[in-house]
Figure 1: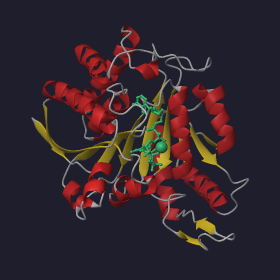
Figure 2 (figure 1 turned 45 degrees about the horizontal axis):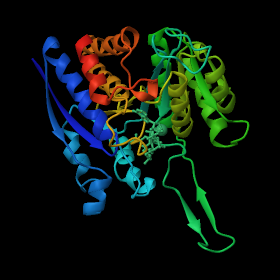
Figure 3 (figure 1 turned 90 degrees about the vertical axis):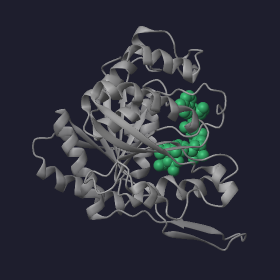
Length: 351
Ligand code: NAD
Ligand code: IPM
Ligand code: MN
């Protein structure tokens, strides 16, 4: 029996609805694969912020450090400004634990209608590799002349050679393992310092991965091609902001943002990695029990893969494919009328 200690952070809104579903699925595959999970649940959230003045305790990262992995729901809710909640919980975990790769796979499953005629089930299967700890998300900058006509805000983007190289190497390595092609998202036609630097580094790192075909596309054109011809992509690497936007777009192309998973990876395994759906806390549907749990469930499968249990992970992704292909039970975002728990039940039956 292999034991794993998992930190659960349900967070806010539908995060608290989809995470229990993921936990049920994990428990259902555990015994069959000789696994046992012990969970520590943390109530870190906007509710905690309103109660205690902080999203998590000062020693939050220390409390998480000795877990094998972190499973997170979503962070952010009306009542607390988003930059306060996110920079108080989600982003410090990504940065503090050097989770510099954010891996976001996209698939069009059979039984899920893509809004796009060109996205056939099975044909669309690619991964967005998002740089996750630097780039446009930075604390460097400032606001001046508040309230005056010449008020201004400056926000610096930070791209380091080491930070870009490590995520590029991960992306080239992933493309090699998948036997596919790497596409780099750039904007060097408009952003004249950081993006030419990014492009140069892609060129340099490509020399170290001579067998991986690669190209680069301007991120605006890339966004259009995600819609027009998503099947042409295999691994797409982008900066923190570009990867964020492209992964929501890709999730929508594949039918619903409610399906898309994410792995915030510390590839060196010095720290726990964190797994979470791509979507947020969805205040517009929170509390109604209708959130699609597949993003959280697929994230749990990515966690099992990371922990060295690919067969258990495949059991879960097979059950996801089966519930979509073989039944008509689905949540409203996919055109159904099932609630989160009814849909999870159905998936568990097929597991
Ligand atoms: P969102 O992803 O929460 O919602 C966007 C739209 O998608 C909404 O209409 C929502 O109902 C729908 N949706 C999202 N997940 C769904 C699911 N599982 N099933 C069915 N429908 C789903 O994005 P937003 O509205 O921009 O953000 C809401 C809050 O979440 C904000 O505070 C934001 O900062 C935060 N957020 C957190 C994370 C995270 O924790 N990783 C990610 C994105 C947004
Ligand atoms: C995501 C989210 C976060 C991000 C926000 C909530 C800070 O959109 O995980 O994709 O931009 O990283
Ligand atoms: Mn996002």
